[in-house]
Image: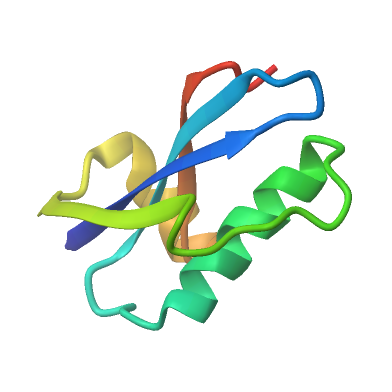
Length: 87
């Protein structure tokens, strides 16, 4: 399976910048779907009505899926890789 990596930066209420990657199948190119995945993740982190647009989230690259991501992608359609300030 080939996946697309969407590089995402969201400013939190405290002013720090949360950096995470949205990992989804390469075939999903509809940004509304990708942003929806990011918003679901952010809601799970306690962020109400998060803004997620091309300003915060952009396509980065494609690569082969890693085995540790594949099960969650098949189950939910995506996975999130937390990079910075995601607590």
